[in-house]
Image: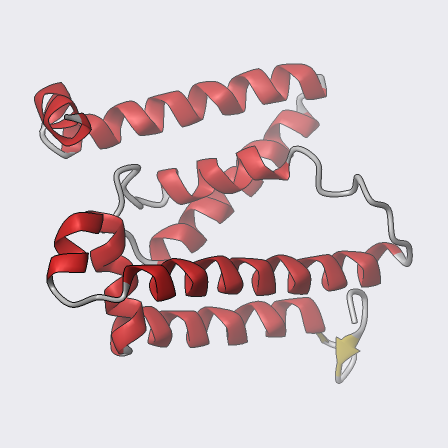
Amino acid sequence: MGRSRLYRAYPVCAIILIIVYVIMSFFLRDTTLGRHIYAFGGNRATARLSGVNVDFTLCSVFTLSGLMCGLAGLILAGRVDAVYPMAGVGWDSDAIAAVIIGGTSFFGGKGTILGTFTGVLLIAVLRNGLNLLFITPDMQTVILGGVIILSVFIDVIRNGGFKTVRKKAA
């Protein structure tokens, strides 16, 4: 599945990506559970008071996350024709950076699939550029960490600055 092609031209990985993108965009935008996920991410107490089943929503989010991780693992195993338990180590920081760069608020309640997809493309271009410049993997991690810090800082400023952060923490 990882390296196979449809009609010798279209990679199956890309087709699966497009299908998951369309389904998740519809799911988050047009379903009740998707709206509950946004409400839950924005403010857990308010979502609970609004009638959102917070426990079910949280369980659903973790279930969907596990499903997507399993799908990604299957595709990766198909691409390399092997199963290596440490294959995805370090990809969590790439995923966090892509989501934050894509405009999803670190405080929850905001974000789109299109923004996340854009963030993924930017991180892929950044990683590829760093590889082409022969930057060591350790330095790449430091640079990516700097990008995450900068993205979170911009998110904090965009959401009203540090006063809002102190109010949300209290």
